[in-house]
Amino acid sequence: MLASGSASLEQQLYSQLIQHSSEHEIMLAEQPRTLLVTSKPLEVVNDGLLLTTLLDITERKRFERELAQRAFHDELTGLPNRALIQEMVTAELSQRERANRWHWPSSTPITANRSSTSASHAWW
Image 1 (cartoon, rainbow, N blue to C red):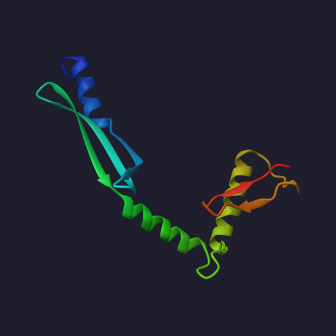
Image 2 (image 1 turned 90 degrees about the horizontal axis):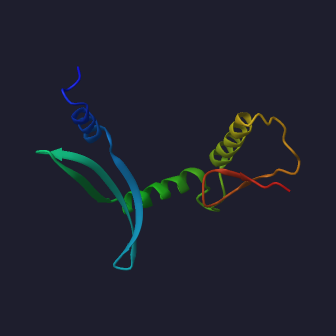
């Protein structure tokens, strides 16, 4: 059922459905911090407002990186483990399948990028 004015319906839908979240890295007291910023427009007594929340997620991000390191690298050597290599090969095969490239050129080695958990390749 539609409201009497289409503009008022659009405003109601906009204020209820649109929400934006993003992560930002900042320096606070000479320490890097990660903030999750969430904004949502609101309408209160016919006034448009923007509700914005800031949440410090620095420790959560540090813990996520630590878990990823432990899950995909050997604890003693720091080298990629079987799970990471398997993930990299699977990702590369999926990418090639999407691109309809079923051949493996000998000049396209798969290399591990230690700063991420994805595979990269170099074209020679």
